[in-house]
Length: 218
Image (tube, rainbow, N blue to C red; front, side, top):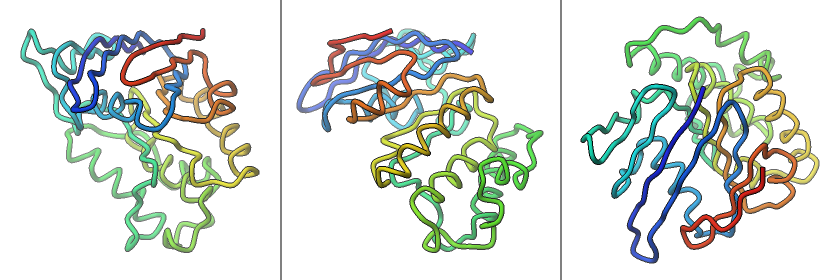
């Protein structure tokens, strides 16, 4: 899996300018709040349109201003783990993950994954009949990861995945992200403002300030 992207996005407070190339690695976008990191994820996912440029995943062009290509988010085969995990509060753990599978099928793709096996692999199968409000922050994150991965994505985007966790859970979940990446071998793009998160997880680290890349650590 290879991600290549070069795009700009005009924002009211600055112009975002991004150039990325990533294999089966974890790329960390690191910087202060408001630096443009989440906007990068939104453009990659198809939730926002860049002003110009291109985004390509493997040999598939997802967005190109010059060629007038713009694949909608649900057809990009990119999973997005939102900062608040975005679990449905009225659905059980099992129902949340099966909803992800239902969306997968509605997009015209089949899945080889058993959602319950995926929950077990993520360590939350025993919680399958509980609701999100009955889970800890770490448990909610594992459920959200299972729901994202049931889609068999070609890339995983994670927006501040540890921000709601205490120190002990943060350490555990960092290790879980590493383990997930070793198993799935797809590009992960992770946003954080925490330098420890970046140094522990990043195969590549890109520092962003006011929409501009100012530091690249390989």
